[in-house]
Length: 157
Ligand code: CO
Image (cartoon, rainbow, N blue to C red):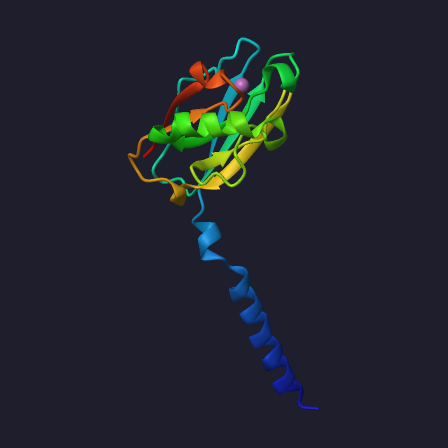
């Protein structure tokens, strides 16, 4: 057995494994974390959310600070283009609670959490590449009727 040759190939394998372990895309990832809360008075605690332009991933955590159950005072957080808000809300209301009040496969919904009730918390993470810098976006709760009060401006960049 040629010891020298086998240790050289082991070195080469180790080097290849090390290089493969470095993922440049992940190293450059910047996850921006945003938080918002909803209450039993059908309100979000923020009228506006902003994600800086250098975010690559955006994580939004929704907390329901109320006590009412989902069937009575459900909240979710859905992100849409401003022009799509009403259509998304109407389609969601028709889709029903079993669909989290979001029409299944609705391409106008850029990101959305699940629907939650009082005392619960949920989050959604989505790539910032889904957004255009400076675009006009809004978030809403898709529970029927809630978007009248539960909506806000979402800024990217
Ligand atoms: Co709601």
